[in-house]
Length: 260
Image (cartoon, rainbow, N blue to C red; front, side, top):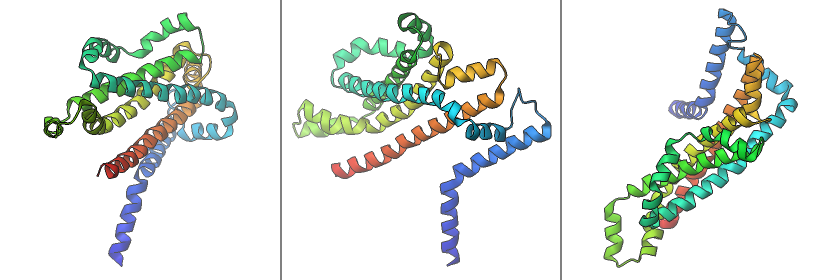
């Protein structure tokens, strides 16, 4: 009976360990600010920033929604483009050979550097940050899928060839199932880089959004307000990342069961 209680306690601690660590870090920062008397323009009290979120959320919401809107449109579009193009490149080596240098250049070029040019073309607005998000997501997903395809064991191709499988059957039964794990890795990376792209676009060329208001608050040393938006952004990114991970585990489990 005692062993069962210990196991259940360990399971609870394991499940809630991220929350406990977050609370611990929050408390340590709060104590450091209070005991060391750190000036608010260097590091504001975490409690003060959290309190600001709850008391001023209605004022923050337009900026939060602007960022979410750009991201929740840009991320799916960029991911879908990345998946489709990756499958095209994997199935046709000639096309992949032709575009491979451009994929490498895009992957090595920070998309945020394109913001000034996009501002000239499109002006100030949500479209700039959305395009940066699409480019970041597309690049991450495509490159991860191509990497996953290059690591498929040769034995799998030899097996289907021994059964005289067609190219289409090889693509459907070997390539596609094999690159799903890499696809979700790309989606998780795209979720991070895409959000960073939106924030960067708002900082450089935006008039609304979390990136814009963080830049504005920092410039006039409203650090409590600035950290409030940072905490909201961290929470949003964490939720999106974990939603993708949860969907990945369910999808791979379902597809594995279907395959078997």
